[in-house]
Image 1: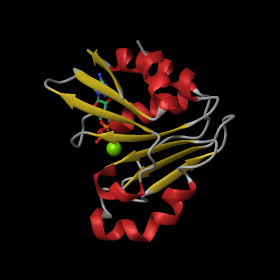
Image 2 (image 1 turned 45 degrees about the horizontal axis):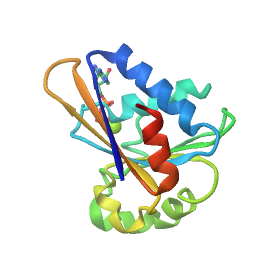
Image 3 (image 1 turned 90 degrees about the horizontal axis):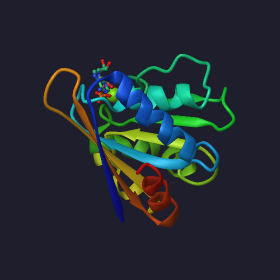
Image 4 (image 1 turned 30 degrees about the vertical axis):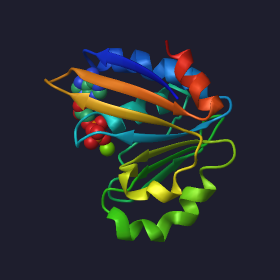
Length: 155
Ligand SMILES: Nc1ncnc2c1ncn2[C@@H]1O[C@H](COP(=O)(O)OP(=O)(O)O)[C@@H](O)[C@H]1O
Ligand SMILES: [Mg+2]
């Protein structure tokens, strides 16, 4: 396990971080869990990574539809938000979670708290916290060799 933390004082700094992260995952893909309270900046990060890898579709929060997918870049992006499903409802999408945890794609899961058993061992955990208006702290933790390398690449 390896950790990396970055304080982003505004959206531009988050963009810089997201672009750097995108470079590290755009070839082979990755499974990423995002934690942090509502409004922290989970979806904002996903949007910036999507922009960085060249997704041309409009990227929106999947909080109402649970899953959005994007196929306009060189690698597919799957973006889950499990908040509305909570623990019980996650059973309805376990097949999708499994399918998008193996193979070459970038999969983001917001509110992964609700899907503990469906999370692949190899993944990156991103925790987002904030204290004032535009200040955000993004903490990355890699699990499994490939993900550890990705997190190291952020340093
Ligand atoms: N440094 C920053 N990094 C990320 N988002 C920021 C930052 N400063 C302000 N914001 C704003 O905070 C909000 C985060 O919302 P969102 O990403 O939807 O939260 P979440 O998905 O965690 O509920 C967005 O409106 C974004 O523009
Ligand atoms: Mg969100």
